[in-house]
Image (cartoon, rainbow, N blue to C red; front, side):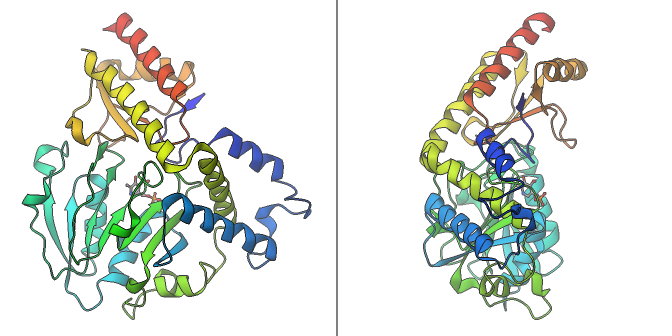
Length: 357
Ligand code: PLP
């Protein structure tokens, strides 16, 4: 089966097999990783190796702390303003879709949010050019969502935020292509797309931004506390951390983010190319900003959606239903989706359009 779910998403088969093989007895310890103390030498080695591999893969320098936190990406929507607003009164946000909106709504609880640009009027089918952004040089930070997982809209540039720290929700972008981390103040990513199991969230924060949390910030949300304790202030999500480490090893074997970027570009352009050439399927996003990770599409007749999904399921093409807020279909094609999965989907879409179009 090929699983096109947006998250939790498909994981590399070899990673799942290794996890199965090690499930009951990790390297002769007689314990599952799930049963190990997070303070044991064994787990500390697993945790440190995962961080080291992630640093290598993403090119993260020692100027940054890497945190393995809990509560998913959504918890960061409040953790970020609590930590980064400092003595500033406002933060800048770009609104390009549903995840931006959620981040904006949450941040508004802690300070003034200045929405510097929005493509809401274009139904989030495009990214407003940076020359039109109404940014404030006195803002605490500038937040944006490089890939809108629901809308399938992806930035093809990194915004220039000047001296204002740039903050990015890379939940569905992280490790899918090379990114210059040094341009960012903070990057966060819910793990369940390109990293590992849900619940875990990876935070990459420039060290000079630590130590600015408001005094009422919950201890568990204070970046300085988490960094000082190597993400083990409390019991971390040990098994998710371990599995993420296996995914990082797998990624390195595949050739890292450079190779992933090339593969992802190829998979996405194949699928968009097919959709554009068909008069039965459509994708509304301005071509330049089409996501490499999430490909939403509609059928010529919505009444055929149920039949399309049923036929897909029967062929092992799973979870193609679009997000409940937008309808239609969505194929998420993260790192672990092989090109053969995209080929199988196109093959099915071709046959379905021929029969029902
Ligand atoms: N941000 C983006 C871009 C997402 O795709 C998601 C979806 O899972 C989230 C945030 C929310 O992540 P979580 O469910 O881990 O809180």
